Amino acid sequence: MIERLASQLGRRDEVPNIELAEYLCERKDAAGIQEIVKGYIGSDRAIANDCIKVLYEIGERNPTLVSQYADKFVAHLRSKNNRLAWGSMTALAKIAEINPQPIFENLPIVVAAFETGSVITVDNSISVFAELCKASNGYAETVLPIILGHLQECRPKEVPQHAERASVCFNSNNACAFIEVLEERLPYLATTGQKRVTKLLRTLHDLQED
Image 1: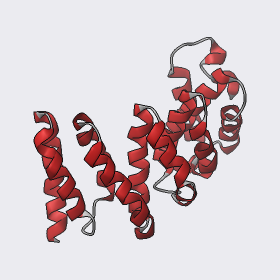
Image 2: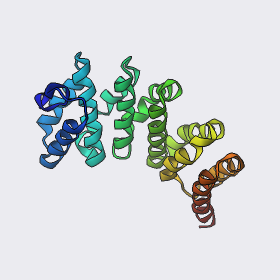
Image 3: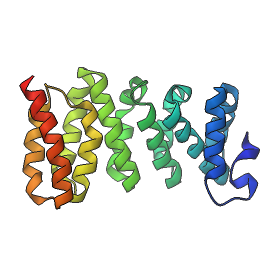
Image 4: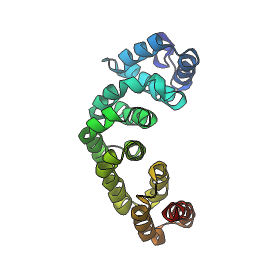
């Protein structure tokens, strides 16, 4: 499978990597995916960069096929290779719904990446945190304050997208907390952002009334 990666074909685009992800998904090729995981954790930078792309594209299409590799994705959040760091958080965002336990067990590593990572890392961190909150009330006790604190403090232009990412964990128990934070931020958002957040607020008010 490694020979089908973009870097091994002398390509600078991601099309071969996406096509490989689609191929592996269609065949549910566990052995082929394992080969890609070995390339991801290997020392060749170009191959590793291609492999994480393949892995999170698989996660987008069929997260079950890569959910067992949660620990490896967590470990690479601390990579000095930024491509692997944010790519690994992207992969975790794809699999958190079906395999949250190893992610929660390594929450300090995930939070550290969230606090120091790139914009893409932060974006996908919110999705990871939201899925953890959705998975368990016990997880939510620890993780929900992280989401709410971020929505209180992040740049106004980030509020709509990150609130939308968090919306998968909205429920009647946390609706009031989200409403309080989002209504506080609402006046400071651009018009389009206000429309997006207002839509979420309607959902939250409906949950509150149920």
